[in-house]
Image (tube, rainbow, N blue to C red; front, side, top):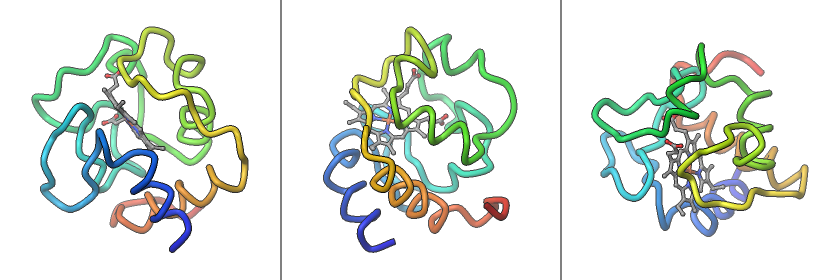
Length: 106
Ligand code: HEC
């Protein structure tokens, strides 16, 4: 978890905030993202690629997304290459779960 938090701060914080009610930057705030619908921040200008996805973000989808955003959601505006290391992805997702009160059990 500590590792995932450090990774998220390093890799994602330039575009995303993680605190409850945190600011919208280049990307949407990520508080509560696990179990939340795709495009969960009201008023954020999401791409059609994300808006077109149905259902809540689950662990499998976050894993695919963070592995390679452009493969999971072709046309996404998230300009991030992805995390190829499986352990690092798991750590970041564990961190996202820790800031998601409504996350389902893994
Ligand atoms: C260069 C800026 C940038 C970086 C770096 C970045 N993101 Fe994003 N992220 C975005 C943008 C922009 C979107 C909206 C994408 C869209 O609408 O296609 C987004 C969307 C998301 C979403 C979907 C949110 C929702 O409400 O559905 C998640 C989850 C996410 N990012 C996680 C991450 C994580 C975790 C990292 C770090 C490993 C990361 N992002 C790194 C810019 C970024």
